[in-house]
Length: 188
Image 1: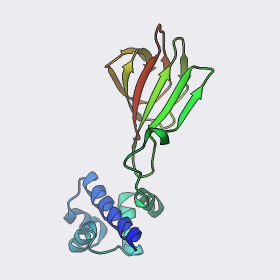
Image 2: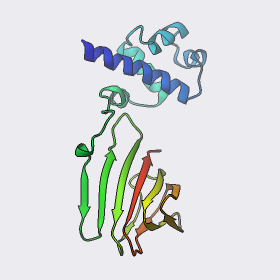
Image 3: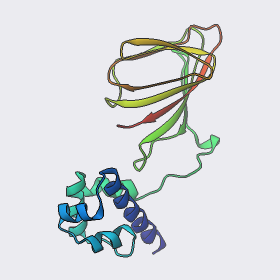
């Protein structure tokens, strides 16, 4: 029973967040959905559980399937991702090491990745995995040359490059030292 109550609490929070993200008052959502303001208020406070029909109406208003909405609230990601639990991938050919510091989760839009490139490493990507992907690249040690949106930037320790990625990109470590950086990735 406790797990069901936690999911219902997260669902209530998510529904309130969706309304705020759309910039709607309770009155406006009531007008759009045909659900009374008091019912919406009680639903967002977790005082009542939505029926399938009520949830279906709200999903239509918010432009998402019920399965997508429920996936956003069914399981909370762990708040702490220990170093031992962070997946590390090595590409020996390119000299790239990728640590998934804060891995993606259906209920979250962002993730944090640590990248390391050895001197001489040069990696090119034809396209982003998701067009419009927002990236913030903070160089922790060394320097890296990053090309995105047709512009090349030399980003040094302490600097942060941020952009939305629509096309190809390239990461190059000219050396003489390796580079270590954090990438904060946010889905559009």
